[in-house]
Length: 504
Image 1: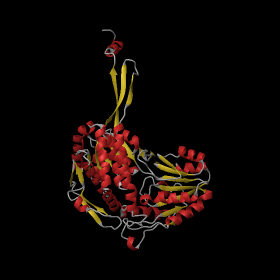
Image 2: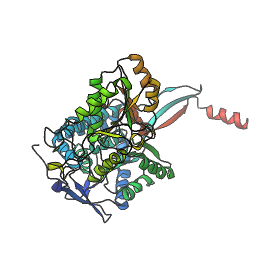
Image 3: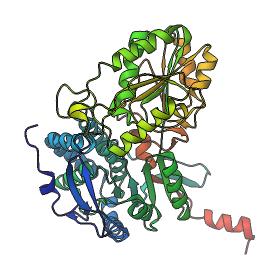
Image 4: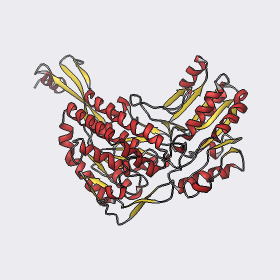
């Protein structure tokens, strides 16, 4: 990278961004961002507490009347300027995202940052298309129409696996629709969320419209979700934490948007191109070191192809190059932390008692020993009801299971609590149509797995939550609907009175 800014200098004033300025948190506790590739400290900052959340919500509440009153064109122009600022600073964003997450630089430069810029441009356009329903005389004497209006202050919580993109997915539709927002990123990975808010200020988005509080979930997160001045909560994270968020939000009857865990099935029928499916499985299971809710985690392979598929997947996994995230030859970086690495390793170690670890299942030594690295892992022979099949591992681990009939394969694919994403691999149009109809997931790919686009929705079924990110569906979720009715006759009210109370 050419211009690697100094993280400690950039955030010397603190890691809370409230009402247009950086400041330290007031919880009395600190947290250190660690480079997971080396174990070295990147930034120590003061965590936010309830008082910081209160200030951020108050700033967002003050900014709401003016921002919601801005014309769609004005909000659109501001987001177009933001897209331009992000493009100018793309190198810094890619560096910071790789540094805090351990992502290979070729992933952040080729996917995370370009995807965020594209999403910003999409919502810049969407801001001008906030539409209600056309007027109509549905009752004869009255004209009705529907208005879509901003909700108010949105409190959002973003995860650590895609800090920049997840922050953008929450901020952009909210502010495009005229809301203001307080976002809490994960304590592990706050850098790019803070940078995004600073870029928004450079683009001319007013102070208080976007606020970032970086604190622990039990202090800052729960206080934000339960705050009486927060009208909507958007959360992305694990299903157990999502349940807790829902419990807190229910107390104040606020709008709720949840994108939760996943355990995506990868269904390979016996007419599939096995070479394409094997390559697809490796890419889809190892994306972001497997720390992706839509990653392929369960490969169900029709029995005639099972042996060839698993052999090829193992062969390809063994060629994946682990290394320095900033090296151009690196394919796979570390997990986000040693805690997460050890959690993944524990899943695999327990699975050895009832399944076969075909390849991987270990931490590398040598130059990588200090980082949170884990080798790509393929497991076979696990029962359908076992932990590695049913639970979200969130690491570079793929479990492969055979099936015989199409009915069995689709039933097994649906047999977890989750329903975020799935894929079907077949050359048969009828099989593909059946799979896309019967797989219970918010996104189903055919002969591919992972690609997303700004124009299409992302969100789950079942325990994977509800609500959509990206697309016009997401935009509409950050609005509320109002029915407006006009009396066309100036006597309709009198007629209604007469109908109810008689002529008096």
